[in-house]
Image (cartoon, rainbow, N blue to C red; front, side, top):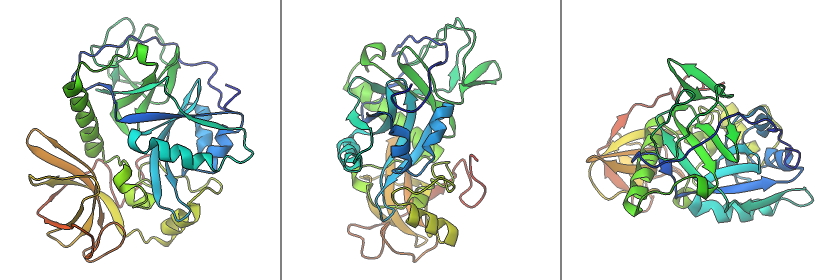
Length: 347
């Protein structure tokens, strides 16, 4: 794909049939798509985001932070090497400001940034790709019609997507380290919409709940510019490259890592019943303070991700004694599927 500098000239030989039979898989209307096209796309993004965009040429999806010069995360984006250009998946509510800010840095680079209105984002919960010739009854799920799936690895009698694969304009990629979910991206006429608003809301809630349980952060308008990348555990989630060249915010992110002074981290919590919202300041009973980054009520239980001080008494942008509307919360900490103080989830 010469126009973007990313070669995916031979996408995986798979075909797709989209259905909406599952209540927890389908279009994710709250997520939008930016498209980056032009000869300088990869080098432009390399200077803008926290991860190594050269990996896109290896059909690898890339999770990255787009930050201010002060290292504050403006947006988290999932970059995929789609045949129409490099595409970025991010919450729709911050899509336009992210696009407008990035456009200011194009200068003489041969890059075009636009909202990809011809593509929609869907999510598949379940993880497995059915064997050739079978039909997976799930919203926005693929039907594999070829014997070989490039970018898939065997897991028992099924296959799990391990890298980006595409056919006929429809792409599929894993969601971070979560092997139970995949992004699916393609034209709206090939990906069925939810039956109604209630179904769309349910799909969104199930997807965001899966993010919480996987410990995968997200940034919305209420939390944009609130955190440095490590506070969102991106150094543990293969979201930062410490060997690539300079990019916006790199100095602060690298200094934070090398000094070993990461005083706030992303934790998973169970919250008592109440009215909760992203960005809410809170203080736990043990004295740790912070802000909610994601919160979902499901089956009478409220689960959340929050950036909290690692130790009681640490104040700052993620919460503090003077944080407006701070609530004292009797929350229970829930386990994450990776260690906050051990090796990276992915090398």
